[in-house]
Length: 328
Image (cartoon, rainbow, N blue to C red; front, side, top):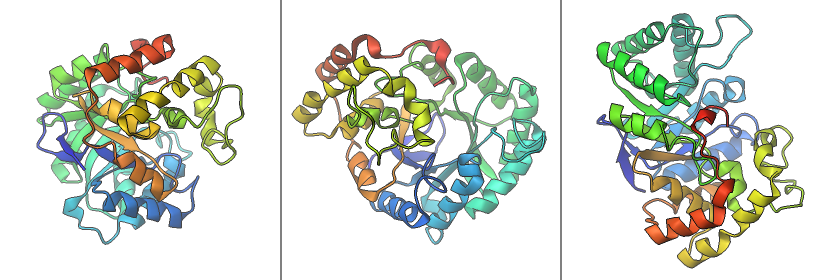
């Protein structure tokens, strides 16, 4: 495993992080979830990402149980707040009330006294940014949170949040966007702004939710045992699965991966890690062997000619429109 600093902070994280969106508490049984976490730990992953909303709060609880007994100082545990976690009007968003209550609940579910990174899961246009950042600053001062991050904020929102954080005496050190060979909407605006303000990217869906494994073939139904074949989990993949040209281009990446001695998944994870503003790629898994396969991308360097070949193959199926931040 290789490690990188997160933003301009002193926090070091594993460049491949383990995330449990769509898996723990929903798509896989708890025994399988624990096996995947053990595989991640055995592979040298120290960074674990979750969110209060995943599986209706159950994902945090599963991760907390899976990590129980591990040396806390050797882990970086990340979670998020924003989406609804209950039926009430204040059970959502980035109000002070919801942030403080959600943090307390997340710590309880994760069985820890603090989280290393607490992230605003989206930008809340209905709440003054000052209220949100002040609540985060108070959590830092209380020792419940060590660092603050955001997820799927656009460049303007990141700049405003970073400036306000500095005024409050805390650091905004990360953004968690979707990023892959197929989805590059952060490159034009978010990455340069993040670099200016001292944030790194912790990217989710480096495999484009599995599309970049090459298992989905044009003109064919998704395999029944795949995420794309899962009624609930596959819903967010439809923009890819319905695009036969895109699926054909992805198949054309296979010779590039083979030439490098990599699996398609390893090529996809290695690709996002070539971006120096990316501190970590989040992988998910329903089986331990998927973890072991993805982790082999750590430390892989792709030469400029390889990156050019990938761009030539994918062509105009790549999404680059910066206005689509948070819409993927």
